[in-house]
Image 1 (tube, each protein chain N blue to C red):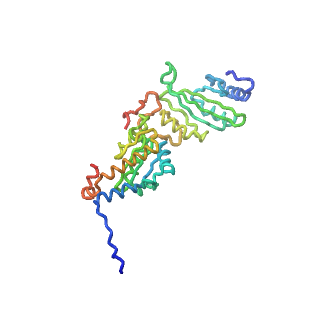
Image 2: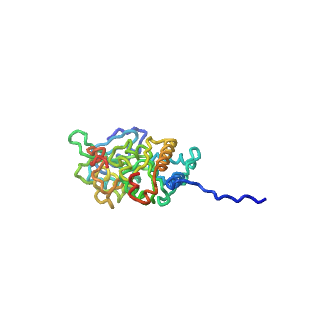
Image 3: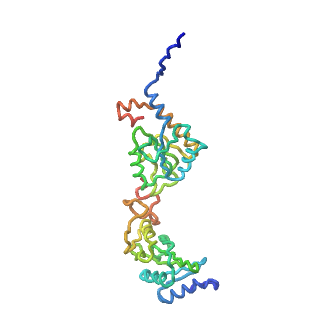
Length: 167
Length: 164
């Protein structure tokens, strides 16, 4: 009696779903800790909240190795050109999260020195309110971002680069 | 002569030495919470500071403070500069006060106290005080193309452009 021939295993899916499934489960964050929100972001990365459950534990110190820009904290007008440059240095595809009221809209600082919302210089995908947001808040925002990525169509963007601006 | 308690002989000695060396230049003086405060005219700032540092031993400039007297009564000059000096032996503090109009500059004290370098740049950045003879008087906190001096009381809180 001979063993049955092993069947070749295969899986049917759509390319978009496969690509977005990979993207959303291996986001590499570039954490720009600009103020107290950074502490909550660090707490999110630590053992208690454990961002590694979502495949995001690989915080990079270089924007060239990251695809998720977490703007955590107050953006001053002096810092704004530097943030914009860091964003430009990140390779596509990339996503941005504005963490905390300061990054969302200037927060409690409607003053001469603070940028009134980081969306004035980079395109933001998810806004997380809070002063600062709790780690649960940040995780909720990141899960929301994962859902948004799952809805996107990367193959369309390959065929038409302008489609990225409409997603 | 300010009222200095008998158990604080060192500030009294310092004040007497200072007012003896510059007899007509002490415009007013005060002693409050263990700190001696002396108002002097602008012109003799470097001479007074040199005397305090070299002869009386006030080797440390702790802070340089600027007050904007915009809301003060008529006749008061626009700005007050406060030089906070400290002498380690004896634990004495002296505050030199001088008044300054908006159009006036003042001598830089960087040749005497190196620690005044960034303090004067900050005073220039926030209040627009011009320190003559400073080795590199430019903004220290704000971006270089920023217009105006934000800690002046007539500066709008949200900035001239109403925020970016």
